[in-house]
Image 1: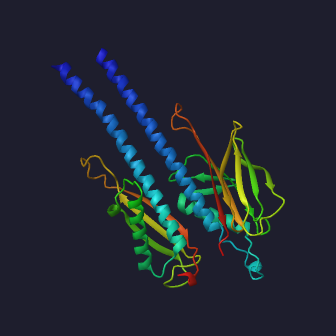
Image 2: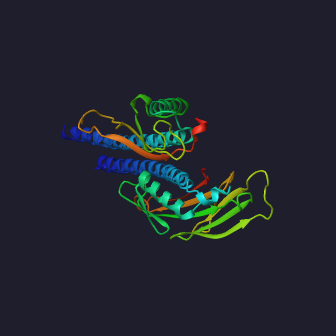
Image 3: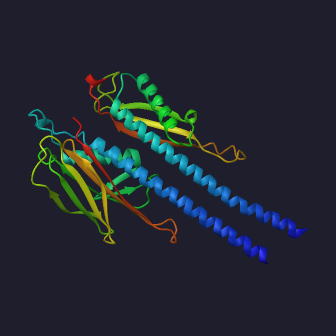
Length: 138
Length: 199
């Protein structure tokens, strides 16, 4: 009997290892994808500028929608939180030449189990960019 | 006895496989992120235009300003601080060892020539060995820039060529990291960014 229990425990322990690896792999991959998509979004804002704050936010949302559709990403678009603010501006509304902005993106931590609800951390990235579009091109 | 040996060795095998998988993930993440950091920082750097020359119709860059702007962005986006020719990572940075960098400015008189940069990484720092510039310029288009990096083991990496469409600022970084555990290979790779001046 003891033998049998020991064997079952053994197998369970053995299974925990691949699960842990899978968890680490998923988190790393999600983080990489979020970094990649936030870089692409930063580039997009950099090269396109915008007419107003609302315009920029919707343009970034659209861009991320297209990116998430076009590429084989594991991350889900509706889980991504976006925050974009200007840190240096020449004009009160236009986002144009040499304005600087910070783009923050976050997503929930991917979890294989809901056993530990206190692990409610988020994966975040923050990027600062400089816009390279002239007023007259907007 | 037999079952124990079997399960312990399976456990070790799983751990090894896991280590390799996670190490590969980390290596890929580092490479992508380093490229991103260098590109974003160089983009910001190339806004450092010489205003006095600009009024005379010449677009030139102030190299010291550009590198200050570069440092600023490396700090904001990647938590790196500059120490000589190295970027020192902090705890939040994507790499753990200092990253060697080198920059080169191709100005308004040089960008129409085909150019080849030969760099050398000696295990410590990155140096420019020589710069070859073809004799005749391309009057309508810009020159082609090629970068070759020779490593400690005398292997040469050729980075993809790039057509210059204006005066350009080139930054090359060489990441050389100790392995996660001694039995895994080290992560060593160059990344480069070529950006035209923004004006």
